[in-house]
Amino acid sequence: MNKDLKSMLASHDKLVHSEMMTVKSHIQREQDDWFVNTLMLDDVSVPFKYRRKKPYQSLNGKKVNVTYYPDVEVVAGLEFEIMKVVRLKIS
Image (cartoon, rainbow, N blue to C red; front, side):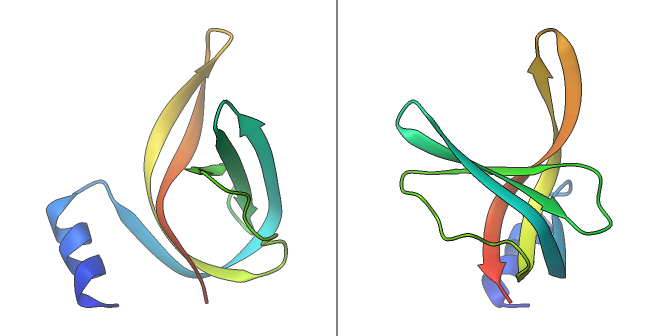
């Protein structure tokens, strides 16, 4: 782990870092001026979400290091657990 990542994890108690996770599914969709990306990782039943201004390469089947924190998204009055991605790197 690099110095920046260690300091991020130390200063934010809910932040989690996972390494060498395999991407099972990667979907991108446009929403306003953003591309919303949703990842499903092997052995994890909760979606990982992040936004970008430009489309991103497909991550299907790739190993990634991901830094995220748990969050809740409300859709049609129902609450869904998600992981909000702060940092994503291909391993």
